[in-house]
Length: 312
Image 1: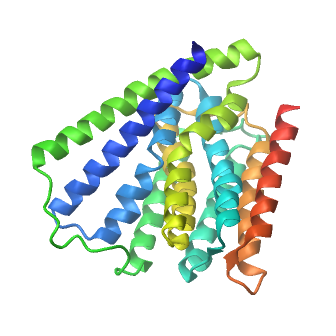
Image 2: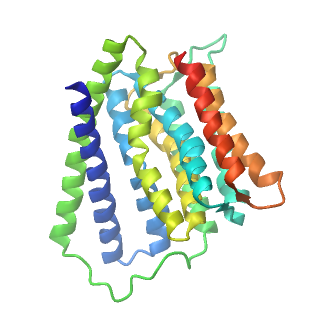
């Protein structure tokens, strides 16, 4: 029954994220907000909403290992599994914005996570409210810089599309939020029960099972984008999600309640830095500006190796 409730909670989370994203995008179109800004904000954050709900609810309930482990596992899944699978389907092109902006920012956020989770002689491994607020400010700055440096010609035009009625849009947003919160509570409760029954830490369950489940929106949107011939969009979605996971989601979670990072090991946060460093190496050390099939295989093998060390 625990697995059944986990799947039910996950289904509510994914349905809620879809409703909330569609409703917010419709609201933005109604008030004539440019589509490229909608894509960079509403859609990018929308695919990270499952991680946001799980981590914030975990933090509020005092489950720091679940909150941080969910972000760590999601970022690893995003790079190693999603980009690995996409690269096996078709080579992923690296745009100038990916190379000069998105990958360096993602690497910087990963190094910041590693630094915050390291226990030092003068402090425990914690992410307090001050650090959380600073991470939110960094995310706002990164978002502002992204908006300023992204071409405004991206995405199809909404001209001629009849806007949804305002009451229906509001209903979509409210239903999405309700499904997210209810599904998040259900998913978190039964994930914690599963961890106790299996005798493993909450962070391990979060890094593996929870992270894989909450990363399904990124997997679906990236594969669909690739099949539609928009490989750069698939890569940008993953990078944007990873940045939001660390700076926005962990920042907000720490503001809600300071996070104890003691249950997340150097192996976990080091693997996050390694995943982004491997992506950085693919972008800067090879003449071809794309992720191809051999690199996709390497990413998937790296993830399998990490799971083997984590679970053995």
